Image 1 (tube, one colour):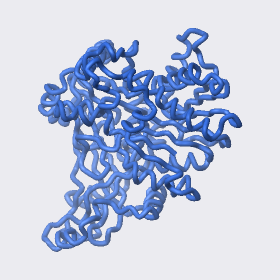
Image 2 (spheres, helix red, strand yellow; image 1 turned 90 degrees about the vertical axis):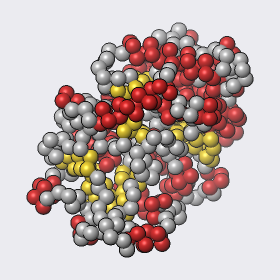
Image 3 (cartoon, rainbow, N blue to C red; image 1 turned 135 degrees about the vertical axis):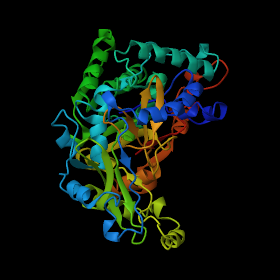
Image 4 (cartoon, helix red, strand yellow; image 1 turned 60 degrees about the vertical axis):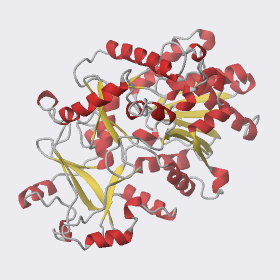
Amino acid sequence: MSSFPRFAGSLAKRAPRVTSHVSFRSFHQSAVSLHHSALKNRHAVSGVRGSCKNIGRHSHNSEFHTSAPRRDLIEDPRYTPEMIAQRAKYPVITAKDSAKSKEMPREAKMLVRDFIDDSLYHPTYGYFSKQAVIFSPETDFEFDKIKDHMEFLSIVADKYKEVEDDMDVRDEVARQVWHTPTELFKPWYGYAIAKYIVTEYKLNNYPHQDLIIYEMGAGNGTLMLNILDYIQQFEPSVYERTRYRIIEISKMLAQRQGERQEVRDARRRHSCVEIINKSIFEWDTLVPDHCFFVGMEVLDNFSHDLIRYDTVTEEPLQGMVSIDAEGDYTEIYTPISDPLIQKYLSIRRQTGYRPPVLSKRFLRRLRNSLPFAPNMTGPEFIPTKLLLLLEALKNHFPKHRLVLSDFFTLPEAIKGTDAPVVQTRYSGTMVPVSTYMVMPGMFDIFFPTNFELLKDMYQQVCRPSLGMEKSVKVQTQKDFLERYGDLEKTRTHSGENPMLMYYENNKMFLS
């Protein structure tokens, strides 16, 4: 699911403290003062108890030390043998198991990806089931009438506040409002995507095959409308051969996407649209046709697994979250037994990638000789659900062309390689916290994407027979928009272009 505020780049140079909130999902009109307020409130959020008892659960530190026997590597040595034995009896459950109950799991263990999946997508208490609200201005911005990008931010802030004021949840931990470049720069951002797709289609498939587009996680349906409006207006002969299918995991959003068509004038409705309320990870139908597969800011909410490495043997260990009877969390590590983690690491080894946490081997050996040295490296988050997407594309969409956009870096992430940002809205302020082990459903958890590694993984899984240069392109979103966007439409009176200035922490993945 795509999300917002995440502007970055040149905006950071003008307003350094704004970037931490406007570079990803937390835009407010007074970002500077709110940032300082967030710092003051951070401990308040992490300590909230009572009715919101588990917003700040006890998240025990899981860095173990060489003073403990190596066999104790996988357990927290601060726990008594009795507590360790009790935790060992907990069953291992998945997010799918948890979804069968309306209650949060107790006395169980979950892989980190299942824990995050449960937090974000549980049908009852998941973040995307109840917390997130998509910001979508009712009218498009007239950029030529806006003085500069700061005035644009002020206008967005006022509209953003109107949305917040209209929301029915007004307690201290309220719903988060998030947006995407698709919404802020409509229809021009969508037009750029459409121009790219049509250009590639006419070069390779027209007029022998239909133009078939699949969009995964379509939010409000704005990108779908903008792409089809562009093709209908500027490429009518292509429009007659266009089919557009949305794959949407959220029942609520799938309904909203359909309603966006219904409220339009009959002449502006697109009869070529089909909305499929299903998770891409449950897709089981072969699509033999040439097609474009689109995902705008969807990868960032794909759950990741967590691994660390033995500092001596470099053996990877899988992270798990143990949940006790009180609902408190402990991060534990076990030898890797999960088939998906094993497969991901096996494919990644074929690319020649070496994790940053395993660099500087000499210094690590020197550190190992010191008393009380940790016997595991720092944490590394690996995108195992992204591997499932690649396998779905290979198996069910063998003739696809991939069009992805997402974040390659994020400020205020928690500790670890490719670690996520975890944040909530508290008393009207976006507050980042330092752990992913938080109350399910109350926090947004979103990850950066290593696009260079994704390019190599994609080559291994989906395009092993094609040369890399021919198969995949990775470029900044700014470079993409400079080539395919109508930049005059998003230029302010001062000559600044917010569509190029913001989201500079985004890259495009094109296959």
